[in-house]
Image 1 (tube, rainbow, N blue to C red):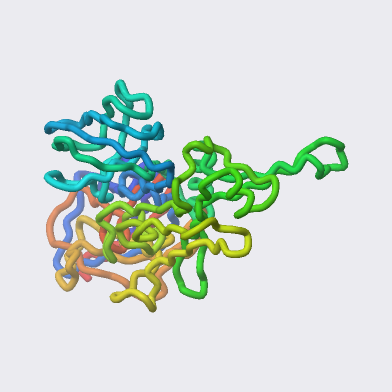
Image 2 (spheres, helix red, strand yellow):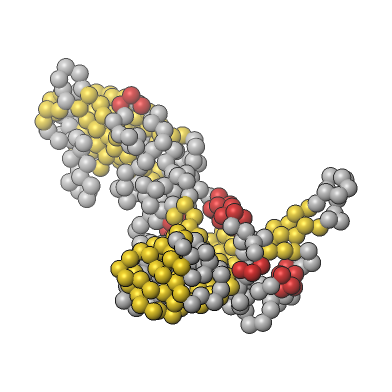
Length: 397
């Protein structure tokens, strides 16, 4: 005997919309030996994000070079440090404190200021991102750190690029050109604004990866003009321009591997700093000789085993069923696998073309539960529960 069951959003039992339960009528059904189940059809909205705080791939960092500030640090098993003997005034929230010695560094390889205390850019107290213990440690700060936290969503490379540019602009870390002699829309006196962002992200199709490109940050207003052209200005305070022309960096958090779904996997970069060390320029970069620094991800030709960018952390939908008895699989309740056949925001349709029946466990059951997972058997976080799943149960083979 064959039984057909249809599940939809009314069967949803999960806050993440990835578990659906069908309750049998009249107290349940008896499942004899050699019974099978298969999917007739599946319609599922492509509504699962590739960047979320659930996955933990929504945070990364960048550094920006600033004027050198030398100082001495004191701290005793505390997240508060005391700074003395400061020679500059560029210590701020985000300033990197390059320490070494008897403490673990943060998972990005450095310590940074998260809040101001009595310090106003020089001597005083500051809060850092972890507990440290130092006594009279002389050091100098040449960079600030900015955290980018992406809202949950489905991101293309261009969207991540926009997030970087939005943060750079909000912090004044960019260069702009306002030409008062250029007319816009034939209206006298209007301006045309050009912006150069010192960090950019783009797809490198040739290398089957992505690439970050970094501009050198000049040391003065005059050098800004030499490097980018007449009428170009630095949007931030010129007093914070670096002492040596140098590049920003992108920091990919730790934990990125071939098998994880963290931020670096999305772009094809392992954990670490990119460039691995701040690139500096001997002399003053000019329009002619200031070549940006480009750092490619881990392309198929440069990394072993291959480490391509995962534009989406979901490459297929694994469907599991609580009644399935599939001893040949490491996932013993594996029912079927549906390919991704559409783009984000549209419906995925799956109609098996062959017999995909699998055995189900003998016994009496009051319900059966279907779950949706990615190719690594991580639960899907689905925004839209409006699925349509049709399954066929054959009792007794």
